[in-house]
Image (cartoon, rainbow, N blue to C red; front, side, top):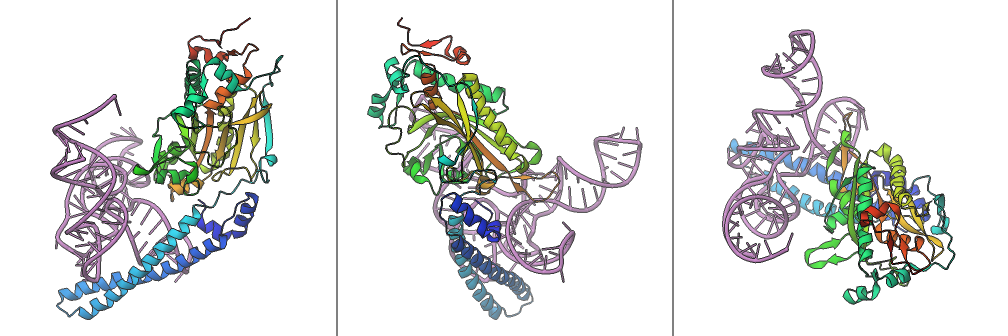
Length: 427
RNA sequence: GGAGGAGUGGCCGAGCGGUCGAAGGCGCUUGACUCGAAAUCAAGUGAGGGACUUUGUUCCUCCGUGGGUUCAAAUCCCACCUCCUCCGCCA
């Protein structure tokens, strides 16, 4: 959520942002609501001041034994008018807030302006793309042949885009989770969290999934709870409605959770394989920090995600998303993309974003400056650290051998109790 | 799920329908005392929004949440939420 006072003073900047993001939003309507709200507020507050004064007068007059009926009647009329105005204000506030909840965040000035992923800017590459002496197979072929990915039974148990992991596939998934959590807690200073996988509407609204993107979420209607699409939601909301001490900033949280996404707009995209699932595992990183530190925190958090791939020795690149490709709440986003030999291109495996105070406003998460003064909004960041399923894909494809077996990256071998290879070599 | 009890400021805890944004205590901040600390004493110490002669004064709102009664609600009524105790069920 943006600051309405800032929007009021900078409507043209907001309009330009909407063009850059290829979004539409009724800026004038919003400003109209705000003007009306403030006008009504001034009127009702004056009436309330009068009512409070007159009521006290009635109390005193009664003690003195005066006749107060006429006074009462006058105040009754004021109260009735106040009630009408309060209702009107509440209606305007609801309407205004609904609109405010649907404006995307202002991108940072360093973000490339463009319509879509074509305008994204590559920042750096790491590792060498493997060259195979044979035609590398896609992960779904490798996984099925090795008996570690079962797509048919996933569909049987649930529906399409659900997959069963078996044997060393499940073990590898779990090894990746443990490896990443150990890295972030042991080397990067994150506190490990196990949050609820279902959250309420308020929490979903705090990070920006609601009200706009409900179609992408699974919902438990009977209990009015939603399955989390990412651990960003519960982790960022840990401090919702709190005033933190400046000296306690920053907070670093990491969590493994399953993530649930309806993929409503993705029909026909990545239909084969494990890349795009309704349920997938992810280790997430969240930072809650001082406003002046959020951009350096974005750089260091991206480095934390990169470290995972460096230790696994999987080639990747980092891109800075353009205004048209960036998420709703972000001011700046780095995507990390891993090399997938079967597709001969880089595919997203992590997304690290600074949201500045956009989510903090929605959640009402503030800190008290040490120098004194009013509480101020914190900045929040989130990043995949990293997507487990896609990481498993990257390992299967990049570490495949000609005989269809897959070698295990050195760093994971202890996590697999010494297993160095999935599938026995045939030659 | 059934039966009871409770929700007040950072914490504990008072609060006859009007002078209560809320006693008292703890904690915290500042000052005095001290070589320094402790103790003691004094003062201050919630949040949000608005106005103005914009660092000070003033107004409005907030006592779990939302309604209602009333000239006036922390205080009365209703619903909901959360927590605690006991019983039942359960990984």
